[in-house]
Image 1 (cartoon, rainbow, N blue to C red):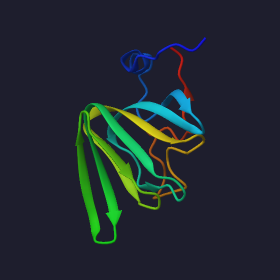
Image 2: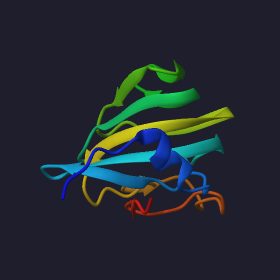
Image 3: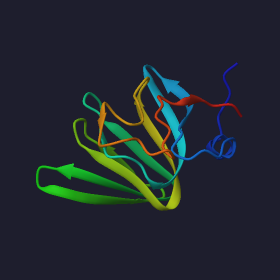
Length: 131
């Protein structure tokens, strides 16, 4: 039976940082939530945009664009879509909780990334939510 999912409960069900949980699916897309703190890795998704909604805290998205690098700061309640083919590095100096919307099977470290994936970043396509 399909039941509503409380995002606060979903986030409370795990502690791992940069390790998204799939809370539901919409057609061929995953809706993922994650707890984040510190820096992720510079990466790019060649074939898909990446949607972010900040549920708590503040998320920073560093972007490499034609005019150079810039950082978009997203407070709680803000949304932003990183266009496909744009190198980006999420970070959350004070910690944050986020919701992402992307095609099922999309790797968290993109199709390409700079250097080694840090130990605190879970290179995954998302984990099933167990509440």
